[in-house]
Image (cartoon, rainbow, N blue to C red; front, side, top):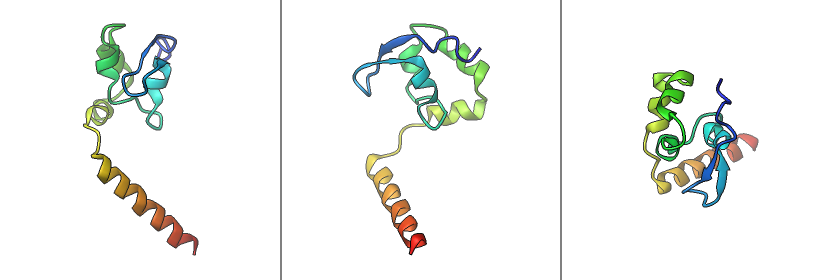
Length: 88
């Protein structure tokens, strides 16, 4: 079951505090965090879990490197500008 490990806890290296696996599993609009494999491999068979519950395409997307922060900010600014224009 996809919720089997949801109550497992560990310290998140990105947030800096304790979190449950449930958070990691659906943090990105319902998709797992890109660090899920790195963070949870010592606690339970994360590779088997991910292969069982996510498609190859989803796993590939999860493992993609994070976007450059400047690029992400520029994309957010552009989206905000487009929303503002559409509301005028």
